[in-house]
Image (tube, rainbow, N blue to C red; front, top):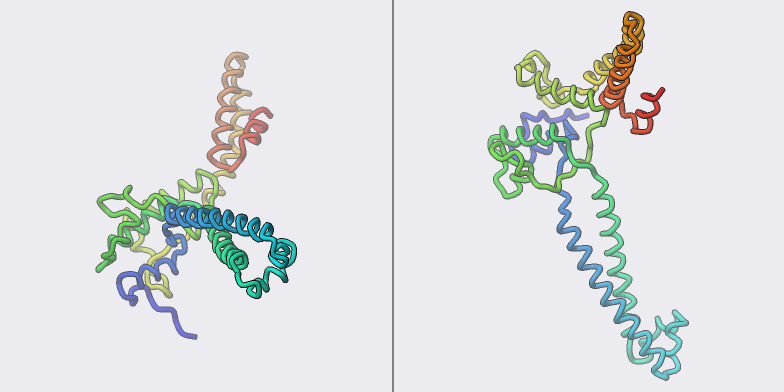
Length: 274
């Protein structure tokens, strides 16, 4: 079995960019060309409308022609399919054209529905791609190089970007911790203590390790909040103070549910009320 080519051995440009996407699928960020796809659907739709009108007119004209065989076109596929014997295939040609255009329209419609279902890339992955392309020497030199933005204009990326491999969505706290921790590791230069991948030859990371840490943190917080509330209420004897403490811990419980879990609004209301 042949060994994988290191990323450093790939030619700079699209080959190295493709290698980066292979190594980190979250970098598979592309344009969905929403405007062009919509325009294509609109044109196909307009073409079908005209074909539909022409077909209806031709069907009516044939049925009222008084010609024995033509009056049967609307009731017999055999008569319609052999209309060449009557000296004209206008209606049959329209049926075939409608069939061909309708197939193209339906396929484009299904593809567009599928494309619109792809999520937007996270800012972390988009910035990673942008930094990768900025540091690529020599880099991309066409108009498409501006799709992901640039170092000087980070917000000037294409507005219709999608990702084929969205990052797993954990709770807000875990997502925040994963993004900031990884950025912190690289900004502080701690990546020099990490070993490059033996396959690709570059340093990588797994956010699943950070998710394990945040799991333990959220579990500890979930255990401490109820215990802490009981201890505080036990120590405080003033009824007014207790009511204020209960209100504060209710708010704290709601904040923890929002930040540390993916609980729905109804679940937050139910737990807080309980």
